Length: 268
Image (tube, rainbow, N blue to C red; front, side):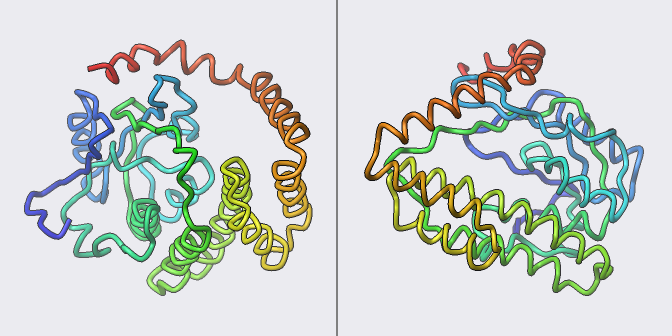
């Protein structure tokens, strides 16, 4: 990003895919709305086995032009566009700066939110990229405190920016904090699956003492004890969760049917 010298730029991770009409679609957005700071298309979330769990931008109530603060709240409520399918104007670097490396892995989301809080952007719900999610290694476990501190830093980047109206900062802080609570719970569940009980305890402590979510903390704590001391009870809970997922999978069938041809790109 520090070396961009073209009027527009985008990022492509080595395991993701941009679709043939991405740049054309993005430039059409800029042509219609010259003051937009970025132009984004829909990104298909796809597992490395070709399954499609979601396409976040299809959840937005419309495509087109968003002005602050509508854009940031739509991102926080419905899901943000992955920057695999975002074309930025070069000017965004001068106005926002580069990625905040202290935010860590979610620094792309942090960057998008800081842009959307202050500047207009345009989106198209036309598929423009594929973001590939890989199955986490059963032996790898991120440190809990790094996850928590990354999100707290992202929240501070918004709440401490006085160029953003106070009411926007307050609402954005609330919405991000709610997302963080949900993320911590599911991170705790992943730690349990990996038998990382040390990090599970850290998650439980934060949920119980920092966010006062005693029920969620109790669920994680109990499940961890089942995992460690009563494996059969733990696997019973896993089976119940799989049944729940099976009953809820109807909403994914339409995505698979409509967009399954994109999975062929993973084989190329």
